[in-house]
Amino acid sequence: MPVTARLSLKFYERFGEDLANELVDWMNQVDATYRTDLTSINELNFARFDAKLEQRFAESDARWERRLGELRADLIKWTFVFVAGGTATVLGVLLTILRQ
Image: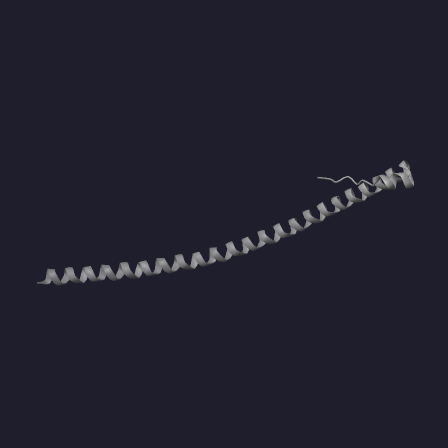
């Protein structure tokens, strides 16, 4: 919300309408310029922040994907070990029972 500069009545009486209005216009132009510059700087900073955040999320995702791949491989390996061990035990018990 822009703020319009105003001067006191004494200032208008002392320097006249033209000069006071010219000064008010100049101050409003300076204010508008600073607002525009500040908006541009904020947009640039946000764009840099957003890019850096996106990069960090991508790196984190890559680390998680690698870790999940390792965990998946370990899970498959241990599943095979337990299934093979259980199958060997069941077969051993069945062979023992059948031999008697």
